[in-house]
Image (tube, rainbow, N blue to C red; front, side, top):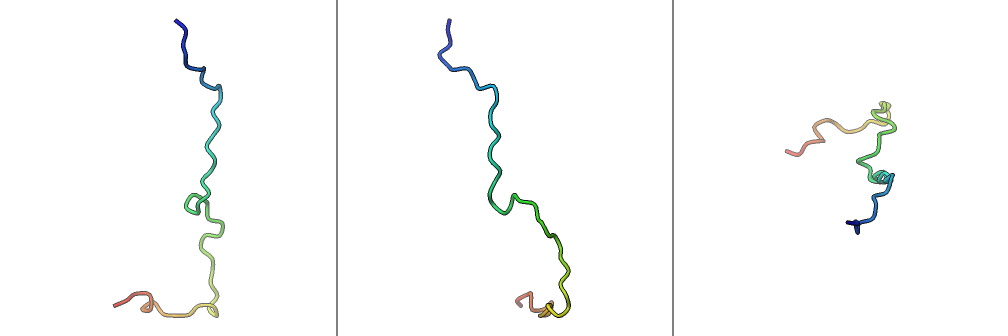
Length: 48
């Protein structure tokens, strides 16, 4: 009996990489911030 389904392709292409930011690798990581560019206090980060 002959099959009516086509033969599967020999090689299936890989899906394209995700374009969103969550899937990309960080380039810089943790950078040093000079004292002259630092402002604010730790208590300013949290609302009471």
